[in-house]
View 1 (cartoon, rainbow, N blue to C red):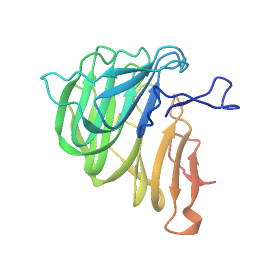
View 2: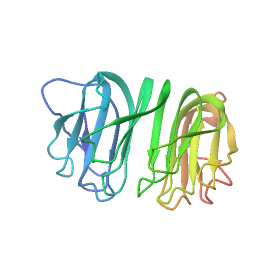
View 3: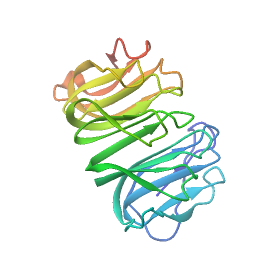
View 4: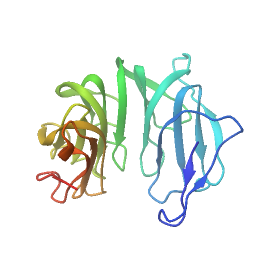
Amino acid sequence: FPVTITDYGVTWTSRYPSATYFSFTSIDMIENGAYQVACMENNINLYESLTYGAIWTSKKINITPATDPFKKWRSISVSKDYKYQTLVAEQDKIYISDSAGSRWTPKENNRLWKAVAVSSNGQYQIAAGYGTNLYISSNYGANWTAYESIRNWASVSISEDGRYQMAVDSNGYIYNSQNYGITWTSRGTIANWSSCSMNRNGQFQFASATGIAIESNGVWMSIDTGVIVTGK
């Protein structure tokens, strides 16, 4: 169930939409935290809060053309105004919304999608999964182009303007791009990378791993837009 924070991470409060526990897989929010949305495995609903995480309600995933929304939803990302939202499902498609999640349109082919990230205005987007390329959109999710090699991608992240992007291979390296996802460079060391994130302008980038070698374990960071990555 969702957990919310209102004091910069000092205290945490559990929030749940009902007495039933769900397998939540991803959550995202707008910049000031007012609007938040979470997806989960094997459910026809998203769960949404328009009250800074205080109150959560279910929101059915309405797909056009009509199809069963009961899927293995893996990741969701939203633009800063909440208008543009992108959702991916394992062994299914990318789904985009330009109506704050009221309607969803399928894009791309069925793949083992794992992660998605959306730039601040929604224009630039990146999606990836196990056994996929990195898929980039520069027109609000309408069209997608494959870049980089096929790998087992575990996580992706994007800067506010979309210029800086990063992805981690679950049994490979950290990869980053400084030109809107067109070209990619491997960084760091081989490890079991599981998550990555960056700050708004892309200067500070982070990735976490359970290392194949003990020295790979933990959090790795870059303070120069991903050019030099060091373990912490």
